[in-house]
Image (cartoon, rainbow, N blue to C red; front, side, top):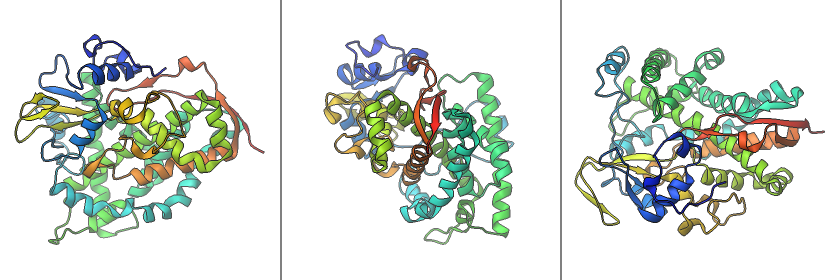
Length: 416
């Protein structure tokens, strides 16, 4: 249950397993008692939790910078591993204008509505092949057998990664990138993720060189041939960082969306019946799933240039501010007294902040929405009487920075 809480934010331990399992009571306490909340034990690190404030900060990059250090920066052992690969440079996610604008202009074309529409038949084919792999079993573990491999293949196809390499490497790399930003990551796992990132860099550096000689109809070829207004190309480290951004944002978030949408529909059978019988409701259902269970719970910003005051809290220069997308999405001031409930008929379904806001609105938002729509159109066309194969309280979420279901076992019948 996504209930609010009368507790104070200090009654919770930020990013603890208990809070990660259901962070919404903590967010409610922060919104109510201390909407700009300094995280205990993390000096000059603040969580912003009210919708109005999160939206303001996201749209004021001159005060709230997206700059941040690379994964492992300042750690000698991690930096030694990084030296075997390529430098991690700021790209779209970790940049401010004008550099952010340059990157976005150079790589935007494949993510436009027109370009994504051209890819939809191939995406539908991917979905049907995945359904074919489990439909005769009349059961599926949706996360591992569908929600994760589908966007993995889509991003792999976009980048021009051969099919055999998608199966061999791609899901592991996506998992390692997601784990690298986990607040619970162990030292051993962090080093493993860093080595995996270097492996991914080397793989894609070779693919980049191949595309320089023989450009194809894929995103890497587009980046290799792209030129800025002053006719400068992207260099290899820049392309590699963009690829990392696409894999990080394009796999984990879409998998989370598909899993959460299915789970909350199953918890709300009347709404499930509505969507199952009227596929035109799928887009607004997906927006509500994004709002209720933000795949990325918060994003960091840096107070880089000067001290900033927000709700009478002085944020010193060089402090970190976590923009709480998920906390803002549950703000009753923005979404009403039922903000903790799943309601696919909610007014203004696009109001949520799960895909960011301002210049850092997710570049792949159109793609993610298209993937989600196609996934549910095909699932609800080919399967019927879908239900949980385990008690609802055995379905759990994992992650602190990112949030998705660990497993979602389902049973179903085959549609006539």
